[in-house]
Length: 489
Image 1 (cartoon, helix red, strand yellow):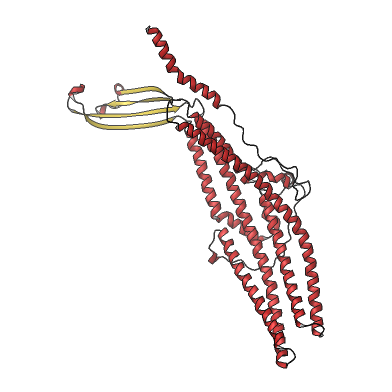
Image 2 (tube, rainbow, N blue to C red):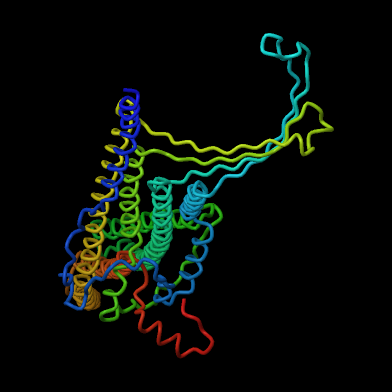
């Protein structure tokens, strides 16, 4: 009877451990992430040479802004890399993620500690004591180690490492975003300077016309209506010049903020905009789209969330901890480190959860929901990446045609102004027709500047959409081989 009872008791005692082992087998099943959108064979915004590859976010982006051959832009980007607050914030978060990886991995290593203590206590007679106060001194060391039988700590370490990789990709994404914002803001300022120069020239021309018209009005050659029309054009053009000055000041302040500098101490000199738009080499973007850092960050975040599902499931399994301690204990400080005062102990603790009111089930559901959200975020980021590339490719293609058409409009409007001026001086056309020709000429020249600015904005936007510079790896490798003593980056 006693033997039967003992066998039954043993079975019941081992049941939770057997159940945990079964669950461990189930937990080892691999998780399959949600499939990202199908990769297109080519982008519709341009011919079939544009393709996509597998993620390669570790490749270097290069100094892509130097393709614009503008020393002022080069200096601005370097200053932004050094002082921009968004980059500094991303760097701090990256350091936090790196520290968390070290903290998580530290749990896999045996923990060692030392201790020392002194106490004076009274042991009562009822417990076998002397009834007098006595001293107690101790010193020792302890070692503990959680065996991680079911991989909970290992999975937590893997998740922390994936979080670090996601933060690293976000750091690259932030740097690329700031660099492109600096370049786009700079080109907006250069376009505004070109527009302001055109408007100032128009103001000067209108003022000359106004002085001539005022003399003719005083001489009685023209009526007050003609004088009012010229004065209207002068005031309207001066208003446009002031509006451009206001807009330029705002963009200059925005550029100073991107550089991490005070707007009150920053000024961008007005320079002539002579740079040529860099040409996109054929076939290269197919090798760099894969480096887009925000897509890589979303992918790493999804993988980290997937790993944490395993961490949550491992909470159901038993934990086995091994401990060992050794040291000395004595009632006299002078006898503390004698061999006779030695003390030691070893132990093992197996803890198995049985009932927690559904807390661990809720933890698994929460981790699974976070995984689903991260997978959806990854899929969305991939779609956004392809949309960004399509947007910039179509913009560049259409802007190229628009620039050609606008160049013709500028040419013919300038010709019309010359003819109208000549005919007006000879008395063949009215002053109103001359003013209309000048107004149309100014509008077309400003539109040409705006189209050129849009081309620069779209070029920078394409670089950002592709994840960085478009220097081909093959070309970079050839340049490296051609330079003795150079190591690949």
